[in-house]
Length: 166
Image (cartoon, rainbow, N blue to C red; front, side, top):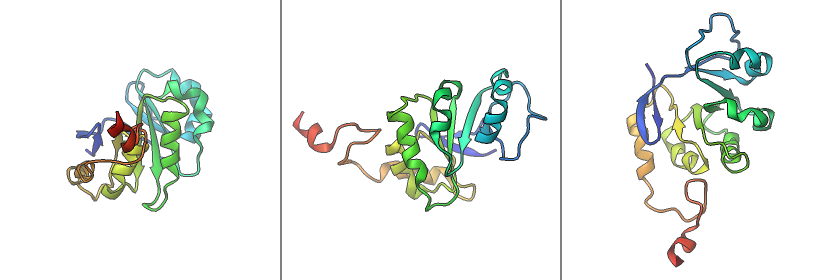
């Protein structure tokens, strides 16, 4: 069983991440699924009729605006990083939190490494499925590497100079 980092703890993964070529055949009614955006587009009514948890995952290049009016239907929104160097979903996480006020879980999936976690958290991610060949306990230490931040971000809305003057 894969372990993920969620809310600064390593926990067992309980959601089933469905691949892009998944159909509704074989899906149970009560399991928690992270479905690809294409499956959501085609079968949103059937997916909403299930009893289990529902989340959606977006690949790099897929825009959050496509599901902006349906965000209340998802407990988890997972954003895929196909490679370590592809940072497009940093902006997506920030948009989810700031523009759309999304309060559910925003999870990083794909080629997620320790070096990215601190910045991802600042952008609005609160769960991380680090690459399977990496140790999630080691990755968790990324949040201890900086004791103070200067800039404002999702996790700290005031810049340091405002916090010091208050």
